[in-house]
Amino acid sequence: MRELGYQPVLARRMGSFGNFAISFSVISILSGCMTLYGFGMNTGGPSVMLWGWLGVGLFVLCVGLALAEVTSAYPTSGALYYMADRLGGRKWGWYTGWLNLLGLLGAIAGIDYGAALFIGAFLNLQWGFDPTPGSTFLIFLAILLLHATLNLFGVKLVSLLNSVSVWWHLGGVGLIVGAIAFVPDNHQSPEFVFTEFVNNTGWENPFYVAAIGLLLAQYTFSGYDASAHLSEETSNASVSAARGIVRAIWVSWIAGFVLLTALTFAIQDYDGALNSETGVPPAQILLDALGSGGAAALLLVVIVAQLFCGNAEVAAASRMVFAFSRDNALPGSRLWRKVSRRTLTPVPAVWLSVGFAGVLALPSLWSTTAYGAVTAINVIGITPAYIIPVYLKLRAGDRFQPGPWTLGRWSKPIGWTAVAWVVCVTVLFLLPQSSPVNVNTMNYASVALAAVLILATVWWFVARRSYSTPPPYGSAREQAEIAEHIV
Image (tube, rainbow, N blue to C red):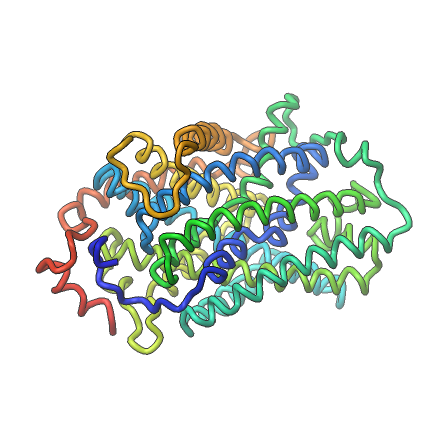
């Protein structure tokens, strides 16, 4: 940390497994796959969900490998923006940071609102609860409060919960797959599972619909930068954080494909699941296949996994807020970079993260398509931020000094593959997802992207004199600011 210019102020209490666990928990196949399964059923159906998962997973693995190599060289809480700053200059770091922040805060909103939807579905199954937009939003706010509270206890508890989360996810997938494989009398045919195409989007072009349907996989395969954001709290971070990113992706790739395949085989009534009174198609699939008791039990497994996921994302986002504020990039940076002396946790950054996520999900009170917009905001913010440091590393050539974890001769081909994929997918997810396009069906990811770029540009002219990553440790500026971090 001192070689990179920072005085360590966070507690380094996370091991290699804990670092892998936080990215695996944020990816959370039981969150992304399940909450967007209904979207996938409408946008391409089974064939796009399954083949799209395999294809997207392969490209995301390339992105993760390339990003891991840069993370090994710059293991800081700032992660992506710090890498971009060091490799490309202050403006590259500035815009990367704002994109990363938008994606992380969008992820909190998407994950926790998804959990609220599933809790509403569970209450509907058990007690006939009507999950209205208002009641769902109240559940969402309660989940945000829970995650803020858990994160205030320090990184040791966060690490413990993430370690439990790994086994909960893997065990949960095994339980769900086993139950829906052996309990139902009827299953869909392999031909249906791997070739059936469904288009309920209103668009006529099947290639366009299939491309939009990749959102399910691309949204789920996000958040693995959490390993980098927690690197200042991880032992041997230059190796552990890089490995954590890559392991989280390939383990999720395999387990997610198994989960999606099993769930699709278990569909009893396709249209009935889409129009379920629970509001959550996977809940109806489990209900039809297993009955109310079995469905409720497995929904609880999914809900707990989603809560683990949201808690891990709050940890990652708050570290980004802390690091960005440490370099004076946010309005009110002096407050958001404060660290509790007792827990060595960035407390104000935690509250800002959950508070902004709550605001981001407010449109869900009026629009039924708001949740899809939130997930698109997450993808459109965080995915470009992943690839900017990789592009700058490729542009730097021999000037880039790799860390102990490196791709060697595979660095350039994997890196350029990752760049090409992210360029394509960024354009793709700015496109409208439903036709006709109106206020309710518009893809607001483009609006969010424009808003954050405008905000970043305006704030640049205000904060450009104060924003900078630090000079080598020991400078007058660094010494003067150390005391401000801990309160």
